[in-house]
Length: 307
Image (spheres, rainbow, N blue to C red):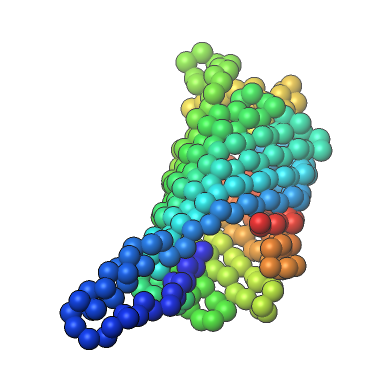
């Protein structure tokens, strides 16, 4: 969020002559400067749907499962700008997803985030940097996915023209699985206990005052999960395995090391000053053990509101 300094009426002395009058001028000016430039509460909500064509993150066509979900989310937060170049954001977030076929993926997530952003000067076009930390508890109907999630990112960016801005960043993520359900002695039964690191870049361009297009690319290295029927090659490369009845009694979730490359395109149309319609389409390709490669595509549509 770009924070512009709020200009206040200058404090004028009643008597322009003498040091005493000057002191009376400087004191209220310092007090004015010490006040927060800006502070507000905000409330966000969005509702929509998504479709993922490879929820299992499987390579073989026989193991690939796709499904759509209805989504609903809300957040309440506080934004505070202690100066014209700094901003602090705190929020509490609730998110839910309800799938049409695979109900084990149904989710209720509760969490929060904290972010700090600094602009290296005054004005709209100066570079900025931000750091964001978020945490959440994800409660899935399928027990092996339930757990806590922690993410942190560092991002730097700049508005390159009146309509175009871009940024790059690094991120780390950690997911803690709550339930250990081993099926093989000596091998963890927490395939969704994950960690990874990523780099990303994104850009946005305003086609009109109300229509914006955007893009984001990222590369993540770390733990990935593939759910398939029994597979000896994947089994030998995995360090955690558990039964995954969400997709069938003969499906198993395997945790492996892999590299995931993602690209997303977005289109946002401002319906009013407080609402927008947002469309996105993303493709993710993962390369894991040996020649285990899989592709997934995700499309979303959201109606978002801010109060």
